[in-house]
Length: 213
Image (cartoon, rainbow, N blue to C red):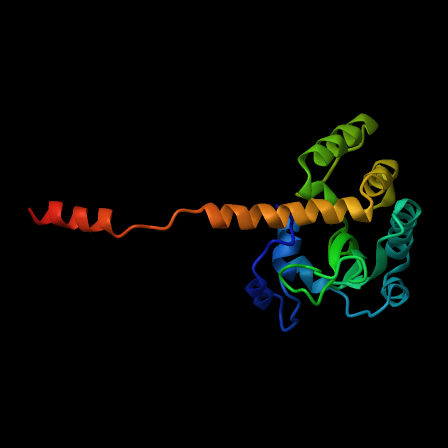
């Protein structure tokens, strides 16, 4: 399952801001509370997002951003998505987009400054058990404590992070590979849904007759 597999109706919990599935995506990824979502930015560009941050937060976010960009496959694009810095598969490469809202490009990673901490979002970890296992094992070897949800890595300063592991996690999944995994995920959902047996009314009727006796 990918964190993007959420009900768009969940958007109603995020104040007056309408972003399909935003709450579901962030909470599934590892947000601790809805309160932190109040820090979602209205910035339209990455530069504006960074400029809006306090100096210490800007420095930390910039350091992580540089690590991501250094290892990011050329198929991805950087921009602002869901009120944070996002790394997405553009529609030019994957026209279908995010399946709950095809008008949005498929999200691959994210970087945000929240109320009490900062976050790095790695969707590829949540979508692949093998990649997740590698990531947790690699992080453990660094000796640093990992404060994470399903794909959200929380930190208060850059020194909390194993930047080399984050960079390698980003590098290991090029856009074409990510699209393939995502498409396989969508196909598996359709298969499961198609194989689900229809309910029969006969057993229920039989039960009613038994009770009547």
